[in-house]
Amino acid sequence: MKVTALAGGIGGSRFLRGVRAALPDADITVIGNTGDDITLHGLRICPDLDTVMYTLGGGISAERGWGREAETFVVAEELAAYGVGPAWFGLGDRDLATHLVRTQMLDAGHPLSDVVAALCVRWAPGVRLLPMSDQRVETHVIISDEQGQRAIHFQEWWLRLRAATPATSIVPLGAEKATPAPGVLDALADADVVLLPPSNPVVSIGTILAVPGIREAVAKTSAPVVGVSPIIGGAAVRGMADACLTAIGVETSAQAVGQHYGGRGRTGGAATGLLDGWLVDPVDAATIVPGAAVAARPLLMTDLAETTAIVRAALELAGV
Ligand code: GDP
Ligand code: CA
Image (cartoon, rainbow, N blue to C red):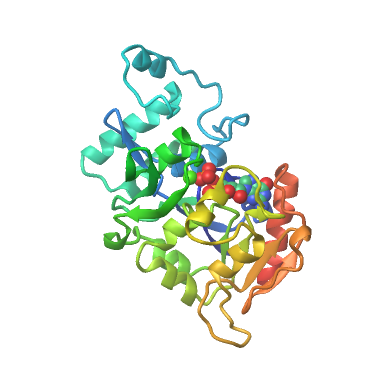
């Protein structure tokens, strides 16, 4: 069975551990978000791709959910002693090695997709991890504060401002000129099932879908497409996804996010959206997404067994 999933960082990678456990023999392709990527201290950093790689490769900090286990922050402390920021980005010593390897390879002319493949040789994540694009896309957030209206990098809004300053809009800069990385469109066209994990619908899944060709490939794949709600009972389970949804005018509810993705309507009605199935938590069981089947089961990814059961429910909804 060929499974293709779009994924952000923490929510996506937790879900992917369940996909791997539910389908140990499947050929799993992950299309990762690169909109969170940032260059700091001359190093190219890809937080979401690394979170997937470390989580599936057994190197993630279980406590933090991002970055490496047994991490130290000596280099970050030394930079701070020089007064060199930004202090809001957690740059661990072990993690730095990944950014050094990546930056060297990119500077030598290798495309990001080759770099990710090379890094994954070490981590053996058990999935084929593809960046959504080899071209740079960086999510920026338009905010208004005492300095007036301005655009800041998504990471600054998310980490320094904790998304507390309302965003007027969220823009994946460069997306319109980007092309899907090699293998991305084929992985969507050839899949037996396409999964949208409970990742941030705006800055993770939304950014991947903003690369021209990817949304269309999800919409027209012959495989069933099933999404899992990142919103339970009107709240983002972890993190501040509600601030992102507010910025694009979507209510923080399982139903609003399902309707934002839209049903494919293959069972009748207009086919305009992406979903054949939308899995929600029992508290959201009344959810309606025209053109998609809705099913409910508890959606808290508390441990691997529970996450695997969530994945099985998504596969059942997909009919595979
Ligand atoms: P990020 O890039 O690290 O922010 O991670 P993702 O975009 O992949 O996922 C973040 C989203 O995961 C959050 O906005 C939450 O809504 C969602 N999430 C986190 N934990 C859970 C969980 O246990 N269950 C569900 N349904 N969603 C979750
Ligand atoms: Ca992210």
